[in-house]
Image (cartoon, rainbow, N blue to C red):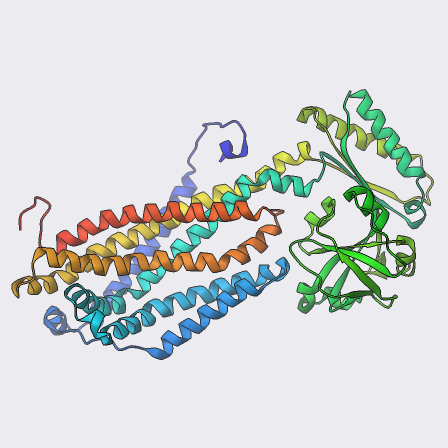
Length: 550
């Protein structure tokens, strides 16, 4: 864990007696409950029936179409939710609902749907009346009846491993990309101003002068300077209307429609993006983030004049405010910011009557010096700005936030590395649980099927035919959870992608490569487990002992 965080590992280790005591008491309690449940089962069991249970034929299971269809409908609904959700905010709540639906559907399909499938295969004479298929399908009907829940558990565990490991690995590998999305420049200065200061360059020029002074003192040269002004506010986007009503903003029902709105001058847009766009009054260019789109031809902010959307921008020099928000952002580039925001400046919201519109001056730049130097420069700029603000009159509202990549990298990696470690740790736990279920399932089912294959041998079935039948049966049953987990992962991918956008990860190709790589690596491991358990199962059902004798 410390290695992942980039720290120095200390090998000091201690054991708390209270931890050992609590663990012992916990497991004593678990085993006591198991013991009491065993006594209950023995008390309720008829000894005569128990003695003759191995000689009693098992009734063939019936296809439960209602449960199978219910499982298919639940799974289809969960898949639809996963691929249809567009905004990341809704994806947070829908994700947990979809997970519950997928778990329930998986159990229903493996328990009832698998038996129904076997019954359908039995009705297919071309498939069923073949030596290997006849034996394997006949056994699978009973096997699925008893062990469908176990296979469903394996599928769920496999899916959990794949989702956790792929997403946390992608976050950790793409940490630098996410760090750059969160902090577009090495040093980022965000100044919150009042209306007078927003349209006056006096304080901003003073700020740039003191920044240049600090850089000169540290013999550093700024690169890729990013500077623009923006008027920011929140609203619920419904059709072509941006609703500014406070009740709608606070309503849980409208959570998926809340947007962060940035009004930026088209001149700043042209300067930063190298464009030469000319807009008439009443026109705007729109740009949206977090893979959200705005399809309307017009837009209206509150009760203001309707703006015509002249163009959809493909990109813009983002700022750190958008990456901090879980809500999507809409940039509106207009010819005159003052004319648009003037009617909004008197609006307030909240119990403290805060201004609805916050006016920001954003200034950022890159540095090629070492991290230690960047941290020192950031601290000095922060101190100088505080000194400048202390000399301003009381009417001035000049609140600044200074952030730097170098200073925040440790905290950033602390979160991502912690998630990566948890993903690996829980992934190992779930993999071990799945392997144990698989192995003991194969062993127990081997002893259950042994008598059946002994009968087959007595009626003339050869070892080669038994092995072929076993292969058909195990391949169908064993790899069904892996295939189902892959399908679950594929449909969950759009939802995972939306969730990772909230962490600042926008590299879709990296997510695809990581997800596919994790699935292939897990499939290889799964095949190794199959090889190990197949030998145990075959030796049991064929009557071979470990020494090779019958």
